[in-house]
Length: 130
Image (cartoon, rainbow, N blue to C red; front, side, top):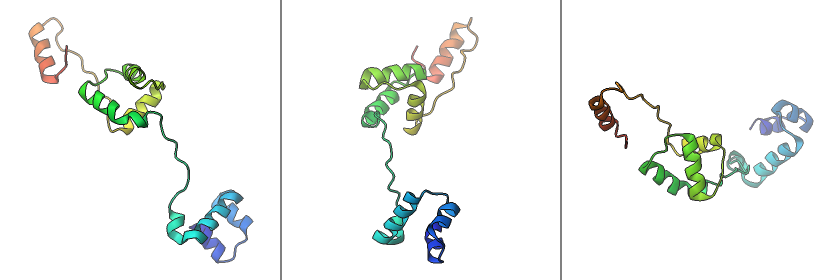
């Protein structure tokens, strides 16, 4: 929008490039988009967005993790690799799982390790399948 404003009040292209902080090619693209469709066309971004190789498997991964949550990112990475044959780093899997709306749960310690009754009560309360 700033580029259009500077153009409208008569600034030369080199000065607009410097003020807005874009390349000459980008500035020309801005002007072409504006000429093609006005402000509405300029407001929509036409930059290619990378798509994860896991995106095609998102529904099946999500349903599997809701049914049986992974205990760690390492386990999630391995299960995703086994299910989809798409190998990603732990960081990429962590980010993908977060983008799906899932969050990592903090692991709590089982209280009173010597008291079996308290252990069972804790496991029932937290729905831990052990």
